[in-house]
Image 1: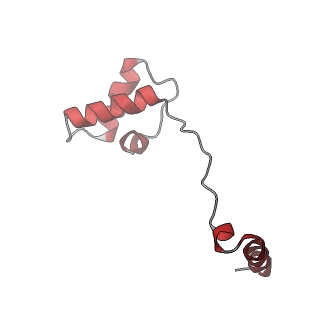
Image 2: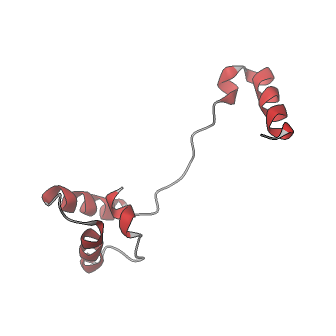
Image 3: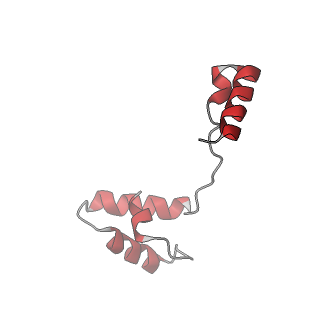
Length: 76
């Protein structure tokens, strides 16, 4: 841990107490469209033994997927 980090934490603590040290939630928008996530969830629910690669193949064939996501992302 660097001196700069400790100084920044101390400055934040002095300015706002312990709550000022809690990191702000990240503002990240999902890259995968909701329709594709819904399809993947429905396919997995329909057949829990279905693999990520199988779900990805079905999603590709559905025409909903413009850019091919990582196979593991389909199961997240």
